Image 1 (cartoon, one colour):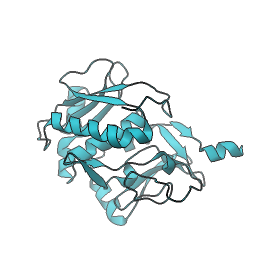
Image 2 (cartoon, one colour; image 1 turned 135 degrees about the horizontal axis):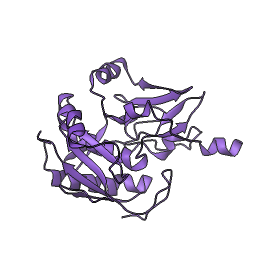
Image 3 (tube, rainbow, N blue to C red; image 1 turned 90 degrees about the vertical axis):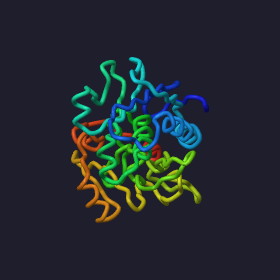
Image 4 (spheres, rainbow, N blue to C red; image 1 turned 30 degrees about the vertical axis):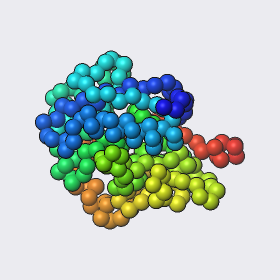
Length: 246
């Protein structure tokens, strides 16, 4: 495991993430198997790019200091079982609504990977990147490439953005903006992706295509990070290029 790195979240050191399955719906893979694949994906692909080492483990009851990755049937379960954005001890909770994910034709493993990456970098879903023309872009690491995936030990995982994607400046030839190399510039998206943006205090979405917008409109977004952002003021990250200009 690479060493810890303090970054945009102001954290350093090893994070422990408790993976808990409270869903009655079949995940399609054993939780222990999925957790091992998520750990390998994180250590091999995500950690060298973003830092912030984590240790994932499966349990039925998390420790007070744990961050949580919880599998639930749907949003009704989240309310009934008392799962919120934060634990009573103030630790982040990321929820995967299994029945909802499967009903949308999506993959539980890809969704779990997507949520893990985004929770680690922006646990409160309140960080924004300063773009051009007064537009701010949410620090969501997989939304722009959310339908792109790769496999780890035969299990599908989510593509993710690189830090360069959030830096609106001229980059050297060959710069990568996402892990699979699909994107060519900051604040772009691949086919099947979308962006959460904010301008003049109003939060909206931008879509890669009308088809993606239609699919998005059909999804149950209750409890999703995108809905939380509509009511959160958050923190703005100013690109290095703009900081130097001041």
